[in-house]
Amino acid sequence: MRDFDHSKWKQFHKLCPFGAMLKKHYSTDAQTERDYEHPNKSTIFHTPQTQPQPQPELEKPKLPKIIPEVSNVKPKAVYMDPLINSLEKLKRDGSYREFKNMTRYAGNFPVAQHRDICPENQSETKEVVVWCSNDYLGMGQHPEVIKAIQDAVKDSGAGSGGTRNISGTNRYHKDLEAELSDLHHKDASLLFSSCYVANTSTITTLVKLIPGLEIYSDAKNHASLIEGIKNSRAPKYIFKHNDAEHLESLLSKSPPNVPKLIIFESVYSMDGTISPISKICDLADKYNAMTFIDEVHAVGLYGPRGGGVAELRNQMHRIDIISGTLAKAFGVYGGYVSGNKDLIDALRSYSPGFIFTTSLPPSVTSGARASVSILKRHPEIRLNHQTKAATLKQLLKEAGLPVMMTESHIVPVVVGDAKMCKQMSDRLLSKYHIYVQPINYPTVPIGTERFRFTPGPVHTIDMMKRLVASLVELWKEFGLPLGNQAIDHIPVGKKKKKK
Image (cartoon, rainbow, N blue to C red; front, top):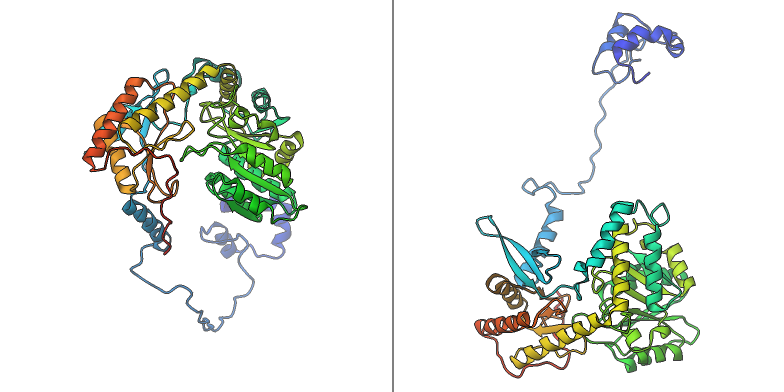
């Protein structure tokens, strides 16, 4: 009845059994009829038989003022002001991040089109050379990878259609997981939307399922590993970066029957250091601990088939959990974890970060599988990559620039000041058409701000020489010293000042 308007109720209420019943209790005089048609009435049954007596007004109780009345405060300022102040602080200390609009040309990496907004709000485009891409090998433009992506779109459409549990698992997911298990010689693998999610989800799930699990973490582990450890609320012990002796001193204090998990990376992407995998595995054997290695900056780049540093050093069989990405050396998108079939099944069954998210699109998984397969069969791509990295380091060293002589493919050049690092980056882009992003706190310690160059097979020797010449001019322009400045150790930096 409530869906009838007043005129229809007036016309048809006599035909309604419920209306006939109500008629016994409510009058249908002219006033009531008018009530049916009144637009402001909240109910069609309104007119009582007797007029209500007026009631004396009650004094309203005085309620305490919870929020003081301030007439000149802007709405929501209590929420926005802290956000604005935080952003202004980043801008003052030079660590505010600006996203550069870079459109890469497939088939012409590392050249990209930079679209900038001029002061007059006019869009300006120019070609630049990208020196900080994590598509280390340029696999994002490989013809076989692109074809695999295109074929999957034609075959299965754009998206996966759901979570892995609800209509979102297809042959492309299963084939890629099998390819990754073969790469790492593990029973099983599990795909995640990113390796950040893979790391956080794996750690929190293991802590939830293994009672009393203690975590031992390298001091320079990635933010995803740190967040997973914090969110797990497990007892944690931080050992000095790549310091096996300090790790053992911590492990030795724990009772033998307490479960332990050692978490570390193979290649640390900001300093370019490589972990002592064999020593850490020896300690894991000695103290009955599980091992979890993050090979994000190593899969595809190291080892006979691209299995990472653990494969290169013949330690892969000693690692319990390997996490990796499909977005760097493999040039596509997504993350994964490989390990024992029961461990992977537990993550599949209990990890919220896996269960409650839409699965990767078929195009992505198809392209990633093609890339993994190609790099398994073509070690010469990795060799070319390492050669280019070594060449650039040598050119920078000979030019007297403060390059960190790392043992990996990462090429950091230290500036040591956040504002100057940002200004120099902008200058490289505007004057020399060279793009490298400044790396500031909290990614690196204060006082160790730097450029992080990632040379690869797509960079030519001429590009390298032009980069070095531009950096030398820039160092002179900003009054920075040149000379025998190659760095063979990790800069310490300064601690963040507490308020």
